[in-house]
Image 1 (cartoon, rainbow, N blue to C red):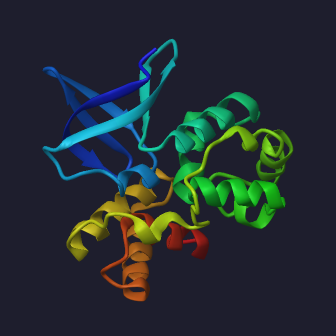
Image 2 (image 1 turned 120 degrees about the horizontal axis):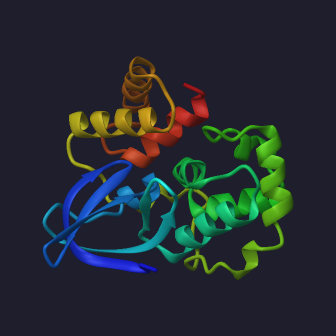
Image 3 (image 1 turned 60 degrees about the vertical axis):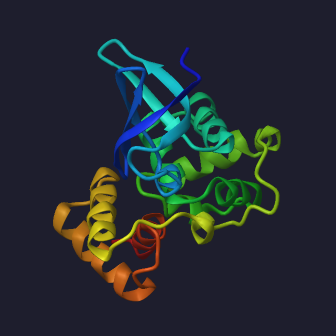
Length: 206
């Protein structure tokens, strides 16, 4: 089991990063909530990880916070029909604290608004996880929406490209993703983080 990686951030996309550790480059898939908390390229990065072993692949999933990894594990281990890819969509669609709040409140509308999560899946999430979220330690005073305190990506063009790539990875068509990302920037402004832009697009049902 690889429980964490600590090394240099070699490359970073909204849905995956490459971490260099003692001459070895590890490709790690990440949620948007972790992407916006990454340091600049070339700096040290510490990612908590979960290794998923399948017959055709060994895939590493990485998370900045323990709460994100705990939620990922709960989703793939306790909710039928949710695999690693959809679990990342869930974490990309709302903050860990926001997800916990939605589950506790039985907010089907918020949960089913996440890309790839329909009404039936949202119902299963609430039923299976409502009594299990108490073991997860969220940061004190964590907001329902985590975008306000994230490190933003500099440059509107870079944000547009990153948001578009993230939306495509979440299942949107390229043209629709680009149009939605541009619209989100025009509404939220250039100071908005990539995570905020993508979540705005998901809420608008682009």
